[in-house]
Image 1 (cartoon, rainbow, N blue to C red):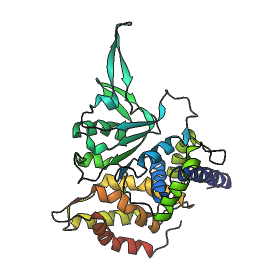
Image 2: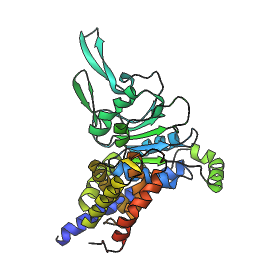
Image 3: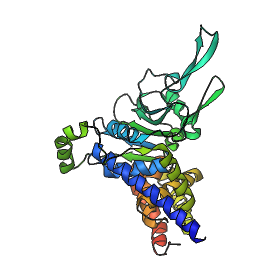
Image 4: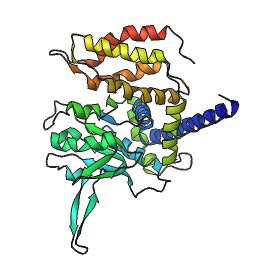
Length: 336
């Protein structure tokens, strides 16, 4: 690689890294005590994945998703798509309430497509497990292919399309468990916990501050910057082959565990790579390390495992099965 190419690469990665810091600062202003969740959501956004948050109501999930939508502005000529939409999932919801429907226009004597709320760049699917599996399945094509099909006609979504879904714990009344195919559409599943005392005090003390619009010290991020960052991460963040070997060895160890009824698919490992690259850039590196793997494994693997009867702690099983491959990876130098 010549000097010009190296300089261009460094400039693109620096631009992407600065964009991450800008977005992170704005989100931290809006949501206090959730730095880890904010970091994971930014990583998922840059990895072109989706996020499933699990927690009880009132923990700031909606505020965080809305703050993300309000942190980005559309600077590209694209069909008019709203930046942020919230879909409240209820037992009486229909698939067409999400995707949209074809309606008859008596003035023109023709049928036209009326887009549903899924036509947004940032979509909050609130309490997704409070609706039936039929409605949950309406999200599958959109999350996998960034399009919806209504009456045999496909309608594209925006390139940025990003879903933050929330669900209540399974033991709450009126919930429907997400099917395996739906779980697999989410890059991360994050179980949120109560924030600590100081963070909760900060929430109470900063109510007036957070009600006022962010000033120039917390600028919005153009949509094009996020799309460019995705390209830079994909092209310029290095993944050593020993990382690939570690991922495969971890997957095999989980498949062979007697505590796992159904292990990981190869697709889950493929989806892991862009997340690792985005994590590396978030930590100001142009290469992936064992630290990145160890950090993201629970969020990528846990919700994709089907555990054997009598087993209920996927994180513990993942740590036990992945310990050997991770230790072997840590013993080697991965910097290119």
